[in-house]
Length: 173
Figure (cartoon, rainbow, N blue to C red):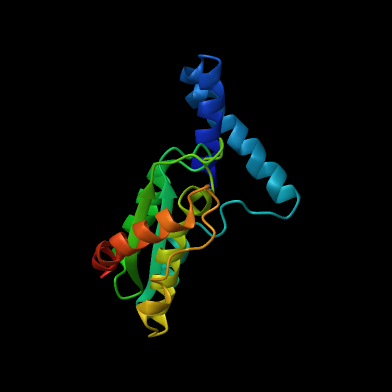
C-alpha cells in the first residue's frame, strides 16, 4: 500500500540520522498532506489498493507469480507477505504459483533488480511460468542462458545450467 511504502521510506531516512523513533509522529501528518495534494491534482493514492481491488477479480484461478527482494529499501518485505495472504484468501480467483524471495543487491540497487542479480534463474523461472500457462514444453526454458551479464564464462554457466535443470524443474512442479 502506498502509505506503508512511504512510511518505510521515511523510517529508513530518519534512521540514517538516528531519529527513526520520530517516524510515528511524522508519518500521519505527512501522509495527510500527500493525500490532500494528490486529490487536488486529481490523483487518489488509495483508490485501488490490493485489499479492496483483488477480491473483485473474476473467479478464474488466475496464475500469479510473486518475486520480492528482502533487502529492498523501497518496498518492505511485509508488503509482499500481505499481498501473498490476500491472494491465498481467494483461491477461486488466484493461484499463487510461487513466491520467490531473493536476498541480493546488484551494484547497490535493491529494488526491481532481481532480474539483474539472478539473470539466468530469473529468465528460467519466467519462461517456466509462462510455458506452463500456455501449455508449452519446459524444454524451451532449459537451455543455458547466454547473457548472464555477470562475467561467468559460457562453459561454467553451461555446467551450472545442466547441473541445476532437474533441481529447478522439481522446485517449480
